[in-house]
Length: 247
Ligand SMILES: NC(=O)c1ccc[n+]([C@@H]2O[C@H](COP(=O)([O-])OP(=O)(O)OC[C@H]3O[C@@H](n4cnc5c(N)ncnc54)[C@H](O)[C@@H]3O)[C@@H](O)[C@H]2O)c1
Image (cartoon, rainbow, N blue to C red; front, side):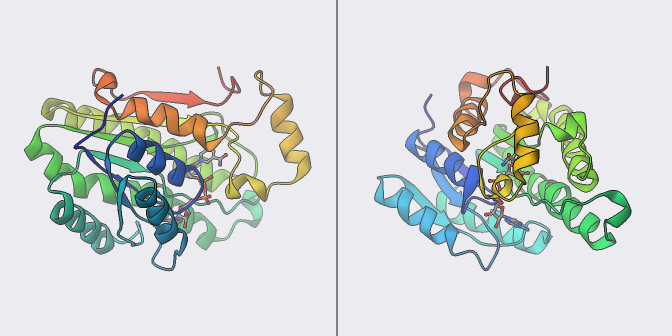
């Protein structure tokens, strides 16, 4: 796999899965734009690490909920690197609780970041990708967007919505040579899953045929393939990275 000369925006890339995706794409030669929330110090550290390791990364912070911030992200990327070839919509949050206790704010925050954020980014990059007549968009969904999960109505709905958005974008953008796919990770070790109780972790483990939790590297390797030219006849697909949890 070879991404030399390509430019990739990865949202929420300061830490966790997004950080590892950014590192992996940088190792393959892509210019990297690290996006994360305006207060993120992780974003600067991740970019510094990539540059130290011989890659090329810049940071453009901004909240994916804001179409102005997203436009600034896209404009800054174009200005620095001249093209946008890859967009990875990775930024995401959880606000887990049972529906009867879920506040309207918990619902709105999760839908706004996980789903509307991805829409904002896709909308902003497509103008450039359509002119280029090439591009690759990868949305980070989740297995719970496919199977649902008690206590995650907001998160599951956002990820199911992201899968619908992926398929619609794939159909809309295919005539211009742009692919759009999603991944559905299962339980991946990160700050997001670290806060889950031992009971929940044990329950997940008992249902994973490969009998281990995933790592951000497991995800990064698949993303690298899906955004590379090796995958340019794949679009509108949802690839599960879950040790066999959903099949
Ligand atoms: N960890 C898992 O098991 C798992 C499983 C399935 C899917 N996912 C998805 O993978 C993605 C990354 O998850 P993670 O586990 O690395 O989580 P994480 O919490 O470690 O990282 C998420 C990153 O997104 C950033 N972010 C949050 N809101 C943002 C906003 N409004 N604008 C820009 N950036 C924002 C955060 O600051 C953080 O750096 C998420 O979309 C998550 O839903 C994770």
